[in-house]
Picture (spheres, rainbow, N blue to C red):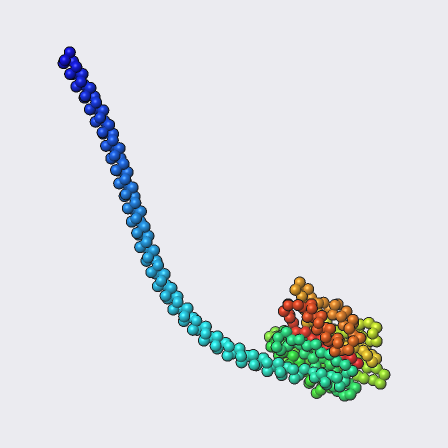
Length: 347
């Protein structure tokens, strides 16, 4: 019995020792796995730190490069700033000189325009609404008093506006003086237009295709008789209105021929009308009728015609004021798109 018990105890102890050893081995293996996992995490973190250090190093290099580029850019900007300041000073000087030149050109153009006192010496009443789009204008009005009973009035709308239009207006005024006052073509507006057309074609070398400029123009010859006044009219792509004895508004229509251009010659037609006293004539360029409002709607030729008829019984000073107010109301804040001219002459 004693040996059996002893053997049994030994077996039990061996089994217990075995299981404890197995447990210890499992615990040790688990600890080794944890250590291995921790080592792997440490390695991973070290790798990430190394990568971030590389990224930081690269970012520092890029920042340093950008700082160098900014330094060069600032140097370039400073150089450009100095160039701009120099250019601005030069442009301002040129602009001031150009402004003075254009202002002087405006003074010269105003000299060639018909003097209102000169017009009033022939007509019973006069108004002139003249609004260049720029400082100088492509519209011009011209008058020659041949005698106490004869005169010629012209209103023209030249190609372009501003400086180009002003050059054409100066040329047109010069040719009108030659036709009417030197060549005595005053009694036939059609002959005046034919002369202007031929001279423009030649002077501007339009046969060579170098230029196609010209003008829309109305020419009227007035001859006072004891009982009436005879008017002879010719126009190139233009017309005029007149009102006799408060009856109705009538139109004097010109030919649908542009003055100037490639054709060397052109024939125009005289239209004649006999008027009593208190007849009012209206001459105009297309600037008033073509002016748009904020909705891009033009004032319109029909509206202008109706407006003139509605005010014709008033003094011409009042008529001009009403026309200006109507134009201002219609135009609002819109930019003036063209030169505007309206002239009223009362027999």
